[in-house]
Length: 277
Image (cartoon, rainbow, N blue to C red; front, side, top):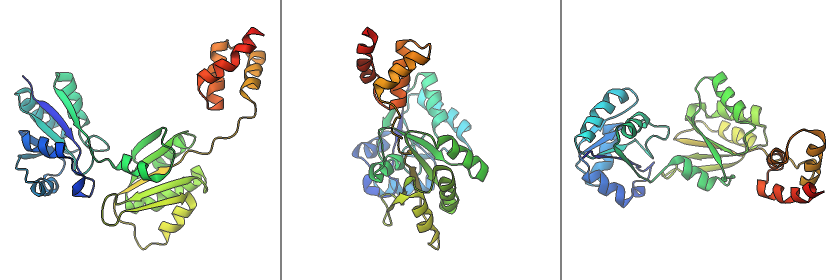
């Protein structure tokens, strides 16, 4: 029988955020693949875990994946961890997990801390849907291209950013999304100097520009632009599209639901009397 790959979340700052299950799994597996073994050894020592560590990072991912697959195929259980948070979320691990699926090896999540979710939970921004962009490109033009593509999104945008690029990113957000767009910036989540900024993009740029230096891990969140009130009611738009287009009722209902920002079932109900007429 093959072993199991456990994808184990670790704390993003506060060591007390380690789950009981994560401690047990890391103590029971035959091997732990860690992004930085020196960093992870401190965590394991804190919890008295003596399991052997092996490095697994961006520079040795392909080679290490083969070695870990061989151990898993031999029946050993292996845990994958990153320096902080949940592996494979803007961290190495994707290739190993994909190979396990192709080889029929079980992959089990041991959930826990995630800076994306922690930041969103306290941001006070819409979370019915959100788009995670990972780390934005370091080069200005590439970064602006990504932000431009997302400027019309109807969901909150979430991204990681390095401290030395925060001001440039905020300046781009002001230019592309508008100075009044709502943002939240979470810094050093779960750590001693945790901070949450909430306000407009311009207020954020002004506030962080006044500091000598910005330090720590950053989660930048940008709210979607306020939805403009439709020019027509649902019934008016249904009639308008019926009279001015060749669309059938099914496609008309879909179009109106998108434009009005309501459920298709609601539009369908309002369309019934019009169909009979």
